Amino acid sequence: MKISQVNLYHLRMLLQAAFKTSFGSTLERECILLEARSEGLVGYGECVADRDPGYSYETSQTAWHVLKDFLIPVILNADLKSAQDLQDEIKHVRGHPMAKAGLEMVVWDILGKRDGQSLQNLLGGDGKAVQVGVSVGIQKDQKTLIEVVDSYLQKGYGRVKLKIMPGRDVVDVSAVRQAFPELRLQVDANSAYDLDSAPAIYPLDDLDLLMIEQPLAEDDLWDHRQLQTRFTTPICLDESIESDRHARQALEMDACRVVNIKSGRVGGLSQGMAIHKLCFSAGVPVWCGGMLETGVGRAANLALASLPGFVYPGDISATDRYYAEDITNERFHLNPDSSIDVPDKPGLGISIDTQALQKFTIEKITVE
Ligand code: OSB
Ligand code: MG
Image (cartoon, rainbow, N blue to C red):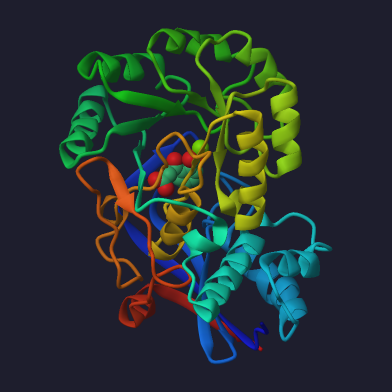
């Protein structure tokens, strides 16, 4: 398979409501859509880097630069038989996993369309639907938080993740636990604590949480290991796990007992699968994280989440939790059992709404 042309679309899309985390608040989500031509086929990929370097150092601008000037030029017209071939071509570029992951997604979409195989089949996933939950941002007060959680329960979500930060942690989470004693509940701090401030969240251990996600710094496996000794609740790592090597080291030192896998964060679906494979053989549960994706990235997440080691519900919510209008013609709906169907058409199994795409595009270039 050869790619002869890639169009990059820098998108800005209005979220249904501001999403506040310990690293900032987002109302307009940015990302890059990749559209590639290959021997009569068109493939798509989503690069999840956002406008600001809050979750990671990558931004939509750095990813644009790295895709346009370094990644796409070296793979244009290269003979790519697999996603691994793509990774081999671009491995001299250090870092920038979100940019790489967007390009790898394109390759999977084209290979799937060429061979008439869904991404789920190509990855070795199984099942008609995957269990999902909803990630709830920090709200203006406790009453609003409980109302927001309740509204998602009414919609049928069976698992809720609450974002926390210093000053908005134990009291908020306790209130939600009291209001919903049976709820499958977990929290995500996005690195807002260190070992000195972490004692403030020790009481979370008594709130029957599924896990505590990324309490400490992204580059700090060792202190997570120290913190895990303080908690019965499993620590889950998100930002800290950028490769299967990180995952292996984290498991070896007991820095976490659950791993959040996001293909964007780790440089592509193939690296996500490698982490899954490692955790699966070690008996460590994983789940699929989210980056407020459009329908393009959501389709890829659903396929990945259908692999057997993804035992906790994913941060993969229905389209209407994120966007009133999306760039895919397909919208993803929540089933009554808190699941979402995995696309079964070739490749990602989605098509682009060109009018919506035009509306959300703030910049476009062609690399050929
Ligand atoms: O840390 O999991 C995170 C969104 C953007 C950046 C980081 C994270 C998140 C979420 C939302 O928690 C997950 C989703 O529903 O897409
Ligand atoms: Mg997270």
